[in-house]
Amino acid sequence: MSTTTTTPAAPTKARVKNALTAGHLTGAQVTMIAVGAVVISTVIFGLLWLMSGDPFFIFTEQTGKLTLNFNWGGWLALAGLLYLLGVYFISRQVEGQRQATNRFVSGLLTVAFIIAMVPLISLIFTLVVNGLPGLIDTNFWTRDAAVPGQRGALNSIIGTLWITGLTTLMSVPIGIFTAIYLVEYGRGNWLSKLLNFFVDVMTGVPSIVAGLFAFALFMLFTQLAGGDITTIKSGFVGSIALMVLMIPTVVRSAEEMIRLVPMDLREASYALGVTKWRTIVKVVLPTCLGGLVTGVLLAIARVIGETAPLMVAAGMTINMNLNPFQGAMSTLPTLVYQQWKFTGDEAEMLSWAGALALLLIVVVLNIIGRIISYYFSPKKDR
Image 1: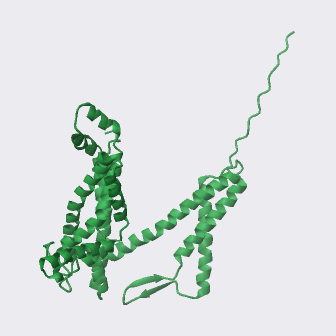
Image 2: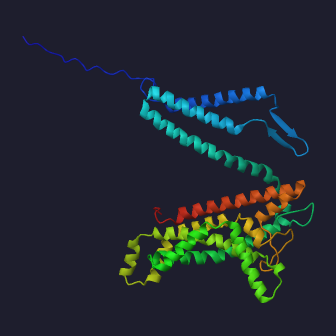
Image 3: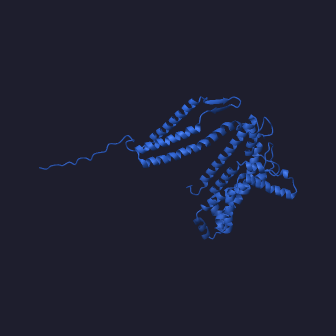
């Protein structure tokens, strides 16, 4: 008679459906903590507003401005603080000390990013709301600022194109050639060290100093030639001032891009008997072309909004001037400053429209730089 023994099945663990009992906070639960922090902060600041007795908003009929009596910055800061405290203590009870610390640090970075983005979003919103009516006006693009009632920014747009174009034409060759020397020929000699020192110094030069330098330089030349020193300011002098600010940016960006080219490409070219200068022209520069163009566009975006050096070197005018070598020439930054000093709705609208136009130009240059960097990067599989 045989006996059959059966092995009992191993007990199966019951599936835990509640993530809290599993020692882990889900994304939805973390979101609920954030929502609770916002609600509590809203209640606290709402009670403070009720206790103050002030109206929630004030509308000024003369200017058409709506002012809210609510501390948005304090409300956001308190909500972020409550979220950090809430997610830390709840995570500590559920997930333990280590994960709670991790969530606290991650939340701190997120809150810091949101708080840092608030002024930028507020600035963009203010520029769009106040500048869009003037920007879509046909007078802004077709007339200068000399005729009351029909003021535009055509003279400033042309001045911006002239001065920025001349600055780019002079700065880009100097900056790229300097970067090529520092990477390919300098190799730590005394001249490359001296160039690096001066580039670092020029990077930290205040913009107003660049304007004073250009103005003083041309005043000296004018005095030596016996000319009239009251006619020094011009678009070309403003270009010289911006060139002082643009060259170090181009040098540093081009230098980093050229250094990224692998040395193997150079050595392969040398092994085929190609000379150094042809290797630079045919191998090095085409390889880093996307980075060079991106650096140049970012350098243009950096100088196109300068105001102080152009006020000193190029001057301000409300009249049209097509000659960058004679007479004061207005640009969009100086137009914003000049019109903001004037009284009247037309001048204020023109000032806001000029500021919005500058913002759009910088955004477009950055987008173009990103696109060029994406399509011309040698690391892409295309």
